Length: 480
Ligand SMILES: Cc1cc2nc3c(=O)[nH]c(=O)nc-3n(C[C@H](O)[C@H](O)[C@H](O)COP(=O)(O)OP(=O)(O)OC[C@H]3O[C@@H](n4cnc5c(N)ncnc54)[C@H](O)[C@@H]3O)c2cc1C
Ligand SMILES: NC(=O)c1ccc[n+]([C@@H]2O[C@H](COP(=O)([O-])OP(=O)(O)OC[C@H]3O[C@@H](n4cnc5c(N)ncnc54)[C@H](O)[C@@H]3O)[C@@H](O)[C@H]2O)c1
Image (tube, rainbow, N blue to C red):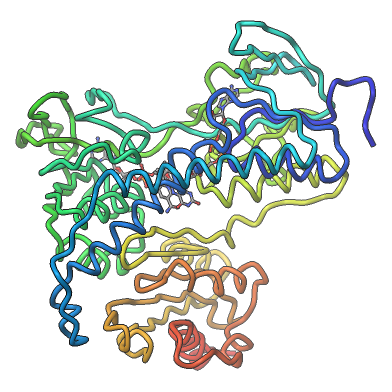
């Protein structure tokens, strides 16, 4: 399989989740593979993203539960006042990062992947430049090259970070201190998850959202019910329609809030700290994309559904890109799936990716999840394809398991084609929503109909019956 005229069959630039899955898959299929990493093995997810943030959410979630006197009293439980050690919570996250980073590195080594440390760049077709930490610069050849360089936090103009009083998720995951009052700019995934952590640990939060409602990227009905619990029900003052136009680090931190539409100054806040959670930008600068005439879309590398890099709409031979740098559903499991698809195509298969069936979850307490089309997208599809859109709601308050847990605040919205029964999308807020969505994601992947799904038996009493109820309601509304 290996071609001796090249140094490697495959060189992957970037060892995040996308690069990791691609390199492992390639080596396991007999390809002579190298991976180049300039910073930490495991990339954002392992070092500064999913892993440490979920460790902080796990620990702070337990604090929230034990500190909720009223909830515990409803079970007849009276716990002593809860105490926690911030440093030990931070240590838990840090240790988990180290364990997973070590395991991931060993997995690559065991698979036979050559790990190269340094900064990688393209040097024209089938050639990769490597600047090692020592300063040595060399050029390697590869039959196929996969760009998997990921993303970095986006800091809007006017916001100055110092990493201590004004910071992004890169620093927040270290939980170095607990500000009495923290402003979180952005009410997306990162803003919501960190608001969950900070409020559980006793901080007061002001949430600043530029668009006209908080949680603007979530289904409006789900955002309404989730927002009531996750924002209004907590020590959070949420402001929407205002832009953090200027943030100056210090003690206190000053934030100028401007009206999103007029850009006129509305108010100046003085807080102890600011977390900037305003999205992410692709890490594509310094990749020397010009050597192959690749034009990016605001830094995102254009690809087709086979992961081939495109120039003027045409694939560049032997060049692939996966993960956040491509800007498609910037999630760890998307990056990993794209990595595998790219390698399967290198191996001569003809694979594409089905973005519609990729689920997403926000790990707040309770969680929010979704898969498939938004309601607006589904309406648009119904109009163009000429079918009637069905939408049903299934409530956690009608679920025995949720009631037993005294956690019945939750809603699932299911979108489907009323004539074929095909499941088009689902949006869930409620206990274990991140796990519940997987069943629907599988149905979307198989383009299954609620006609069949509604006959499948679910264990009683489990939260999965929330999904079963939605399928049954949908089946009863089919027109054909
Ligand atoms: C706080 C936070 C929480 C998150 N939580 C979740 C979650 O719960 N679930 C989920 O699915 N996703 C989550 N994400 C998103 C997830 O982390 C990303 O989607 C995922 O890491 C993308 O993987 P990637 O391989 O594309 O890029 P990355 O993980 O960013 O890895 C890219 C790697 O390439 C390296 N690199 C860049 N340029 C070069 C170069 N020129 N040469 C050599 N190396 C280079 C970088 O150092 C980096 O290690 C979270 C993100 C954040 C910030
Ligand atoms: N659980 C998960 O899967 C998970 C968790 C965290 C992050 N992520 C990934 O990381 C990405 C980035 O997350 P994020 O929360 O930073 O981005 P996001 O795009 O989800 O949300 C950013 C929010 O900030 C707002 N905003 C932007 N500039 C602003 C300003 N100047 N003032 C006020 N509001 C402003 C936007 O309107 C938006 O609502 C996500 O898209 C996701 O791909 C995933």
